[in-house]
Length: 535
Ligand SMILES: Cc1cc2nc3c(=O)[nH]c(=O)nc-3n(C[C@H](O)[C@H](O)[C@H](O)COP(=O)(O)OP(=O)(O)OC[C@H]3O[C@@H](n4cnc5c(N)ncnc54)[C@H](O)[C@@H]3O)c2cc1C
Image 1 (cartoon, rainbow, N blue to C red):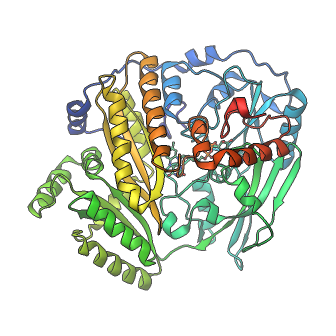
Image 2 (cartoon, rainbow, N blue to C red):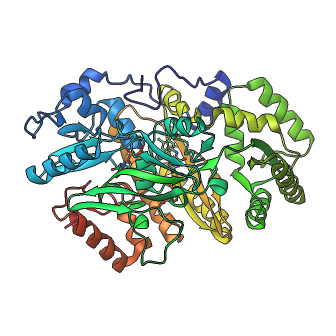
Image 3 (spheres, rainbow, N blue to C red):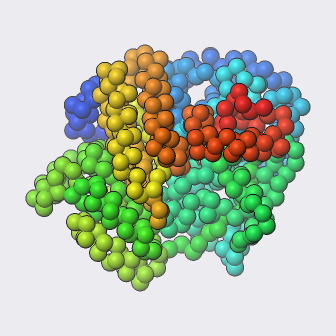
């Protein structure tokens, strides 16, 4: 069963070795291990629904609790400490487009807000009802998960939007195909959620981001439906798909989507390559990204992330052995680990690997280590489970991410880390902070920073320190000229920083689009665009 107050299936754990506990305690101290609030405490806090009974709706407290939030840090604190600020008044489960239309009509008629809900994996407050806001219906799309068609001539599949990653891939694999969209939240996130948040999979360099894969679809809005035909390309004015991509439930409910699929690759392999430091690794990665080589992934950790990854890997003997070997070879404390992914036909991948490694060698990259690549591949969707273990040991974490041109990416990463460190030090707390370049492009890279700190006995204290740091680092990111999000989206947490990227006229355009399709302002209020400006 899915954990109600953490990540993943409750049958799966990510144990933390003793050596990792000692490491964390040494770096940032020991955190509070206050017991979690039981589910009953949260159920008792669910208020009486403000909506009348209706066959479309579940008013059950448990349904409302399970749809009250996602995976952001405030969501974690709220669930674990029994203090969520708001719950939906009802949950509706959509089994068909007719159900979606009925839910929209109900909300319009009764003046209720409607929040489309995919897999509930948002990390920036996309699916939380607003405290004191309109009565709210959360519309869960998960029953809509069918593969409707697979056109092998055109390599296009049509799915209902509520399909989750593993189900989508399983249905395609049965016919020899793949979409190749693998965000780390793959286990639970859905096709509709990926489109609505402009999500990015780990191997996007080869398969493309969701905007490259999304070929067309069907959206139900309060004023009628929009069909976006699947076309290989079009010069017929602005592309409506791009308005829907990243619309975060504000413009309508995506009910089905056509996606560009491929034949499953003959080879999908990952390798670890060590560099003496992050800067040389980044130079190699930039050159590979600009060389036109068909690698599928270039994920480059800074020195702190490289060290932490090895410590948390849970294989102390192996990491001691690796550490000794690397030191002997001259790769010391500043060493930086690249995970290099190669995907495609055997003959081509051999050549791609040869060329990519030649670039790595020119920047002092060590020989490729297949075992590290295999370990990464094995745990690629398991790593988020570590968050559960860390919480129970007294620690919590969050991530911030942006994208910048190559010329500014590494200095920006430094500023981001310093800003976070400064915000925590101002409150007398130490921080473990590390960064990787997570996705690369010919003109730049995404900079993905994780920060880990002790949780306090008092949840308000944990939230206050997180808020101050999040505010400061978001400001720093936009001041650096980076996007406020490369892949997680805007939601509630990033909404105050959107205008820095879109400009005043851009914001007018976005607000007008919302008003045109949602004249009553019922669709996911307060997300993407700040609540007070919605009208
Ligand atoms: C552990 C973890 C790892 C993650 N890794 C990645 C990653 O590698 N890459 C990445 O891009 N993101 C990542 N994320 C963020 C998150 O998984 C993505 O934003 C994902 O696309 C959300 O999909 P979802 O189905 O869970 O949507 P939800 O969280 O349910 O909803 C997100 C937003 O989409 C809207 N929405 C959902 N479905 C529809 C629909 N059918 N029609 C209209 N609007 C809809 C919602 O209203 C909401 O605004 C990660 C999150 C976690 C917790």
